[in-house]
Length: 112
Image 1 (cartoon, rainbow, N blue to C red):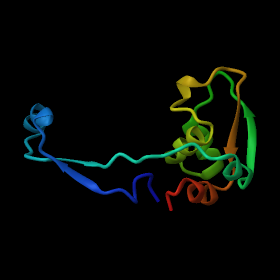
Image 2 (image 1 turned 180 degrees about the vertical axis):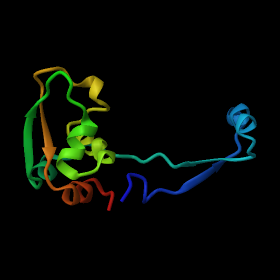
Image 3 (image 1 turned 60 degrees about the vertical axis):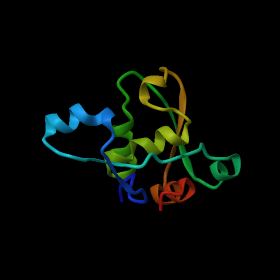
């Protein structure tokens, strides 16, 4: 299951993308609609089993996703759960929480 499976594919012929369309030799650019996620509530957080991890130099969200979920594409679930847009926002020594069960995390997110 991918991150955008529930979202529509939009066709964009807006003038803003004219140079991109021309460089690709296409008349329309297709992209996914922008999802609207919110951070989990306290009750939602309490419903998920998590592991705590102290962020250290060299850590990467995609490596943690591979370790916990067997799939690097779920890095964004860890970022979302911790309210972080990307790993550049995480300082060494910060405790992050990793939802252990990817299925439950995706359900709380509304992605399934």
